[in-house]
Image 1 (cartoon, rainbow, N blue to C red):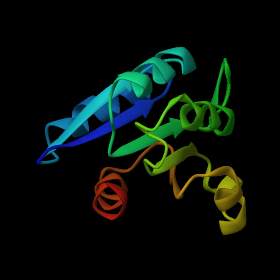
Image 2 (image 1 turned 90 degrees about the vertical axis):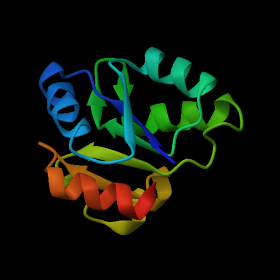
Image 3 (image 1 turned 45 degrees about the vertical axis):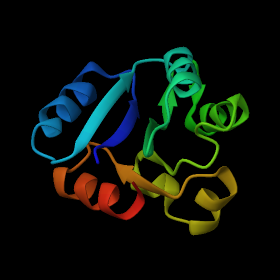
Image 4 (image 1 turned 180 degrees about the vertical axis):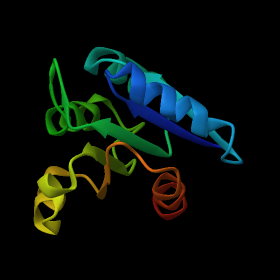
Length: 122
């Protein structure tokens, strides 16, 4: 069964990387949202197996977006989410735990780290 992953990032370069990874990972389908509004809309319509959210976007931070996604309905209330950004910002486990993220991916996202995250959390 194919796993559905939502990537929320306003960077066209990062989205291009993920699109390049998409064909190289079996049984994974990526959906993309370039804004908080698009991510909230998609999360209200579809169930995802994993959500990856850029740490900082023009509309706000990843933590606020994840809280908004959790409030929508039951579709993605318990979907594992990873924040993407600088490793130094997320090095304390308690920080991630308090914000609702299960882990982080350092940007630029490494292909093998992405595959590992999908195996662990999706």
